[in-house]
Amino acid sequence: MPENMIESRGLRRIYKTKKEEIEAVRGVDFTVDAGEIVGFLGPNGAGKTTTLRMLTTLLEPSGGDATVAACDLRTDPVGVRRGIGYVAQGGSTDPEARAGEEIVETSWTSRVSGPVNARPCPAGSAVV
Image (tube, rainbow, N blue to C red):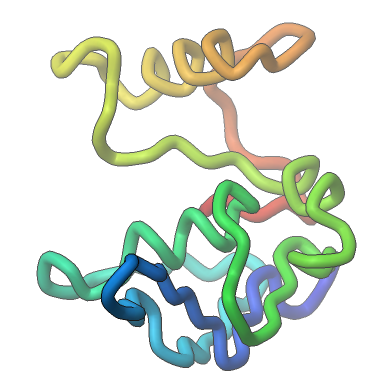
């Protein structure tokens, strides 16, 4: 099992409009050790969702480096996705869904193959 499950160094995301560049995430550095539980807090617009979208390979970073579950975000995005589980806080199909139901629903809508059960994350995997 990797020592650091998540490691981010200088992670950045810039959105370009016709008139300007908007820096949504500015050089995020942090490390999450194996077995550690972390809360990602900040005011609205601070870049929390953008950072998580980058760490889950749903959005390409504009700069910096990160590894998740011992896989490089840029060079091994498939390995990152194999090693993590991610269910976003918002966007549920059912606002009253419990966590386990949300995981099953998200896996179904994301076309995850094989049986899906709400269970603890296996050793060597990251929960983002």
